[in-house]
Amino acid sequence: MQIQFNTDSYIEGRDELARWVENSVAAFLGRFGERVTRVEAHLSDINAHKIGQDDIRCLLEARPAGLKPVAVSHRADSVEQAVNGAAEKLKRALDSTFSRLENR
Image (cartoon, rainbow, N blue to C red; front, side, top):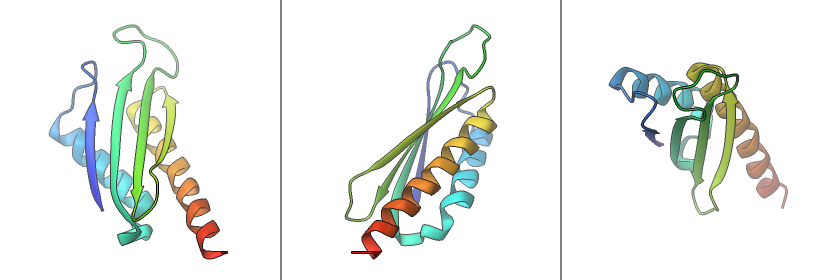
């Protein structure tokens, strides 16, 4: 599974943050193995430089092999919460997608 990491201009896309996001997403989705070819992670600060609640947004888009992309997003107060929340949602969405395919 390939994981691509992107940020907007308000979040520093340091190598350390990119590695942490890749490791976190891989930990949540690792069990899907070869069934998911790529995951794109997009982090953005909704309110730019202003302080506010739930202003960090993580959008995750998974590319299951041979299927349409599955996308989810989560907003939170911190990057860690946003990434973990989105990864949990994506895990549930992929579970549902693959379960429906197996039940056919």
